[in-house]
Image 1 (tube, one colour):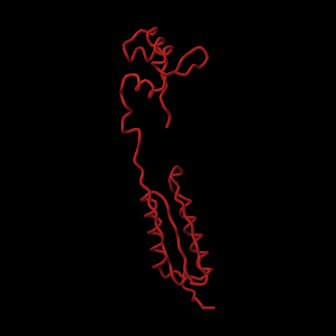
Image 2 (cartoon, helix red, strand yellow):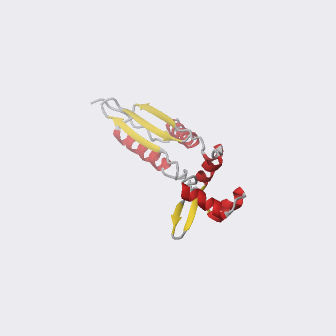
Image 3 (tube, one colour):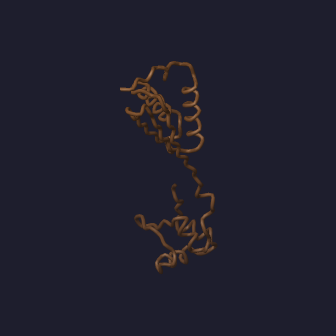
Length: 150
């Protein structure tokens, strides 16, 4: 998030002070500022610290993340590869790039079991779980191959 920066003149106007008073605050260390060339810039947070105000709670947003593990039994290597490709393609398209879904797939050949681990925001995770449910419960042949024990 970008912090707003103010000039000495803008700070003086906001606080109802003279420009020289604001510069005096900067020189004495009472007001923190960054010098750019011959001018000072004051961050909004530093101005708030001088006036005793705190940043509004709206500047920080609460974020929720869901972690899900889906276990699918009776899956051979070919079906696991097809399902993994479908899930990864879905996770990588149509979602907020700032909050991507993270997906990992694991196939246990000996147990004919696949696990899909999903980490992400609740809405995107729910969409992916709905897709998985639709694929696993559909008669589309994705998992129809018989699994043979070795």
